[in-house]
Length: 336
View: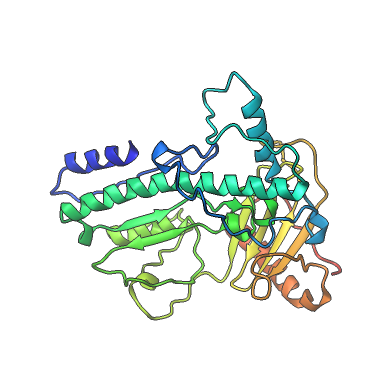
């Protein structure tokens, strides 16, 4: 439906004018429902499990919180299966669902397989629609002169750390997919490792449109990196803040460089809507992304990283100020 509506808009637009079009899909949000044509997709395939899938105890990795564990989904599926009057707004696929007689580890494994397959089947419907749009651009001879960007609002946990959902500075949640095509200018088949933020994307659009960005824009166009093999200095650090506090997923902020990451869990809702009034203990986490890209071990209290942590702490304060984030205070680090 969304893909067809997009093509209709493209057909009816004034062809002598340039256009800017944003096509949004609700997928792949829970309940991860998918069309019948994808019922058999991945049916007899065992999806590889992430290394941290069975991270049941937060203390094993040095976390201070339990996170949104996969079993939350498990219980939702069980309740849905047992409820005869299903909520019309929520339609979980592949029902009924049962884990009777399974061990803790078996439940997580079984839930993981269903979750990821539902997710990928749901995502396949997006692929179908994108293919229709791209095919139309090819058929109408617009593909060579059209900038196509495929991205998302955030990443998503697919069993890593035993989690599902998002709202976390860990890599799986904070890293966004970003694919861009512009045959006339952008080099093909390249992967660029520059760090960018979602607020850089509007600045890129304005750059290609020949429009000077407003002074209020904090984003930076990365057009030069896309169009040249030369190295251009991008961001040295990225700042992250997530405000929606709950005890299982405390509100936090942090900073990431190319090689490491420092997170401060301030653990309170600050009276904001949809936040818990229950405060969590403040906590720090530090990850060496070169040695530990999967973020399996919090090294904040490892004295070997003292200098790196102090440097990131200093930069975190600066980045927070640059972002105009005046809420919460970042405490000093006296001892590590």
